[in-house]
Every structure is written in C-alpha cells, then in structure tokens.
Amino acid sequence: MGQHGDHARGILLDAAEELFARHGIDAVSNRRIAEHAGTANHSAVAYHFGGREDLLRILVTRHVDETNRRRTDLARGLGDDPSLSDLLACLILPWTEHLASLPVPGWRARFLNQVRTVPSVHGILTRTATASPLTEDLIRRAQGALVATPRSVVHGRSWILGNMVLGVCAEYEARIQDGAEEPNWTGVGYFLIDSCSGMLSAPVTHQGDFITQPSPSICCSRPSLVGPHRRCASTASRVSSAIKSPLIAAPAASPAAAAAITCVMGAVRLPAA
Image (tube, rainbow, N blue to C red; front, side, top):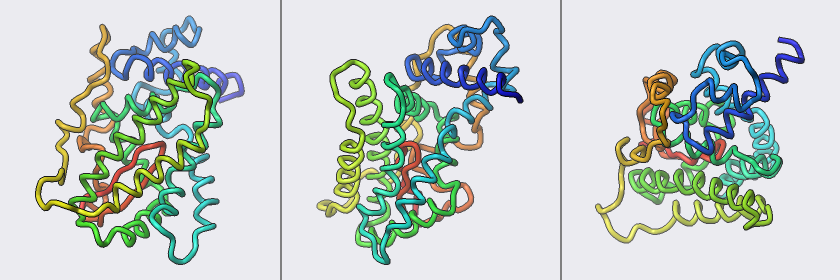
C-alpha cells in the first residue's frame, strides 16, 4: 500500500483508538470510526484492515516493536542476579515511557483499559504479552525472585496488579487531558514498579482466604459501554474465541508454566502454576 494508504490507515487507527477509549469496544461501529476519521467511505475499515478483528489486533499490537526495543535495552543492563524491582522495571518502564511519548490527549491507556473488560478481545493482549523470547526470559527470571511466595498467592495478587496497572495509567492519562496533572510518566512508572514489587513479595499472613484463580466472571464482569451497535459484540467475540480467560492466564503453549511476571502495554499477568 502506498504512502496515501498508510496515512489513511493511521488516521483510522487514531480515530478507532480514541472512540474505543471513550465509549468502549462494543459501542463503536466501523461506520462511526470512518466518520470520526473524516472519510465519506463508510467501508473504510473493511477496505484498509479486512475487518473488525484485524483492526483490533493491529490496534492492540500497534506499538509492541517500539516497547520491545526499549525493553531489550533495559534488559542488557541487568546483572547476573537482578532484583524483582529490576525485572519489573524492564517490563513496566517501556510502557510508561511510550505513554510519555504520545501527544496530549492520549488515548492508549484508556483504550487498553477498555480492551481488558471484553473477554474475547483481551485475549489478543494476553497472547501478545509472551510473544517475545526476551519477555519469556524475564518471566523465568522473575519466577526465581518469587520462590518464597506460594504460586497460588502470586497468581491472585497478579490479578489485582493487572487491574491496577492499566487502571492507574488510564486514570492518569485522563487527568493529564483534563489539566489536573502535569505529565510525569517516569514517576508513574517507578511508582508502579514499587507497588507491584511490594505486593508480589509481601508476606502471607493468612493461609486460605486469598484469591487463587479469579474466574472470568469476576475479571470481566465490567463490560465496555454498550450502545446501539450491539452487533459489534459478536464480531469482537471472534477475535479470540479460544481465549476466555481472566487477565491472569497461562500462555496457551504451556498451561502449567510457573508463576511469573510480564507487563506489555500495561497489562501485568502471572501465568498460573
């Protein structure tokens, strides 16, 4: 596709990300995206992306290469025995640094926060989270820093952290837009690193009454805003029909993988033991 086509695709992606962030995945039709992008061709999404599934996949993975390059740079600086905080820094800072690079208003964090509320669509996010060998290596190394904590506890805590990371970033992004905050994504990144590290490594004071494996109904009970375009829900459900798991999920290729940590595009998840 030529330069004009790439430009048109970029405008459509920007329009879709903003509308999804503001209104929810299922409340926004392809026609509305085209109109918001300023094109008279109401079939523009189908023309440029092939369909809604491809549009969502491209949106979710839009900046993965950029964050992975930064993650690689940070990982090169790790010593032989990195702390949990060091490993979390490699996972979280590329995400918050990317958010810092976006123009204001930015919609990225709020879009991904909407994605995680739709079980079928957030499967793309969880699959992407372990798509690189580097991320898998960071996961294995993080496991070693958490051997003193029962895996079931780590699993439950990671569910909380997954909601926290995306929720905090989405709220902060909105506050920047409203003028309530001066952008300081570096500070947010280190705050999240400390918070995640503290929760994951905190002592267990009571055996039994912790969340061991949140069900999809718990994790995904807050759907995207649903407007008159309810038909979009059935389309979105085909994006990842095989993955209906909560935010914390084991990689499909290894359901018995050890508990570990990854943060790609703001989603913290620990595979089940």
